[in-house]
Image (cartoon, rainbow, N blue to C red; front, side):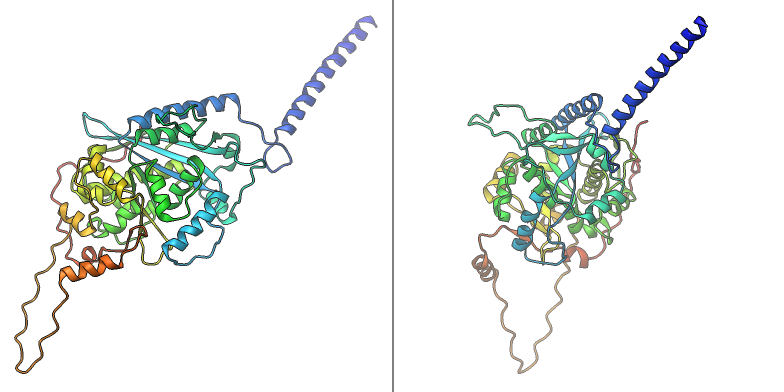
Length: 454
């Protein structure tokens, strides 16, 4: 009797405690349920926040030590007007400026490249940050293109990870007359501040939208004209390369006739002979998908940059100084590839005075080299064929009109120039139509494979 009553009371008490714990767990699970099932998104844990902050600190240190940095962004959409057409640069740029502020930059990939002094190998350290805007409107309303979101999903972009693990960003704080900021930038903005302060060369692939988003999200409102934006960008970041433009103008030397898509170009360049050794040192996992991971795309962009320049220069890139002073590299300074533009392949970033300042800092004569000049300086452009001998004049034939002199042509070109930014039209006919590049000299050391340490 008494023993049985006490045992029953003990069992009931234990049952009540178990049921209470279960109810608490269920309530917590409902409050932090999975996205899309009626629950509320859980905030990032303190552990994941600490890891993200640690990645920012490590990335800032690697940026300051890098010879160059490749960057890539993923967006929630591309254009408000989705029709595909070819238009003049001014019209295309206006379309971009109207679209970029309305879309989110979802993710930033940063690949810091450093050449080891003792063996010449390149070490790549890649970081990836999910971006969360801070104080960008009361309701944080933004546009999204379903086609772009589906593209990211099909290429492995993790939207749940984006919502649960993100880094806040804001525009860079204003600086005073002494070039100092009154406060430290927050979150991943510290990485952009390091890129600006270190003035390290930046590398993008087909990067017009990337640089527009970087400026809009981290610097300020976008200027309305290509010339205005170019000057504003160059005042923050002094040196930029676009691997799509390099591959476009170097097709003949690279022996490449395929699309200028990043993966296809990367696979082709890996098959060419060379001596560059490239090692991936994390911390981004090596199995990330391309086009769904900005970090992976930034890594591939850095490798394409190194492999393409080695072929075009016929020597390995040895330092950041090479990127600033080599005549062929100067050909591509601060030019960004432009698509969907009639008769245009690139847009110049920076004014003439800014280009002069960059050339002066590099210790080389200022000026803009044409493709033929730059590739001839590197010994890659085929020599033009000798003109055929003139045919004997026939009796009674009228002499052909004399060709305009070089001075007359120069004056005509000068008269037709306007204040619009310089736009480089395709000028690679000499490369396409000339004789094939002679076989590369025999190299005893074949290209080392890209190494991914365990």
